[in-house]
Length: 124
Image 1 (cartoon, rainbow, N blue to C red):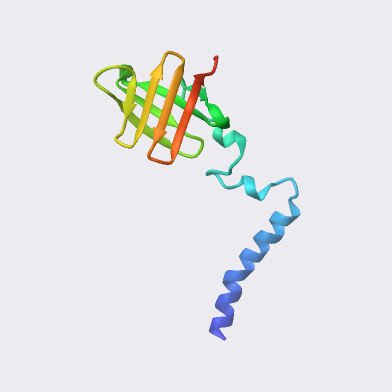
Image 2: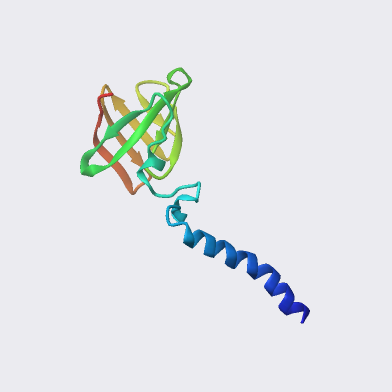
């Protein structure tokens, strides 16, 4: 008897919540999740001063140069990576990813499987 009462006490509020949410057709349940909802609006929230690089094969990434040029923040569509500037030139790396910038052109390799070639900085 006690077990049945405990289940009823727990399940009744949950069932009521589902009924109320189902009745609110203007509320999209998938929009209640505040984290990555795979929508375009979730991916457009970029830090200030980022540059979009569009590459061969439809690939792209955003780049933000920080700390007076001594490091770069690489923003992929699905993650972010910090890179440190090499002693000379316009090369940034974290030991795995390597970004080389030459004016508005860039090449990016990240490990052995990710390669972004023929990247061009998009006009702002």
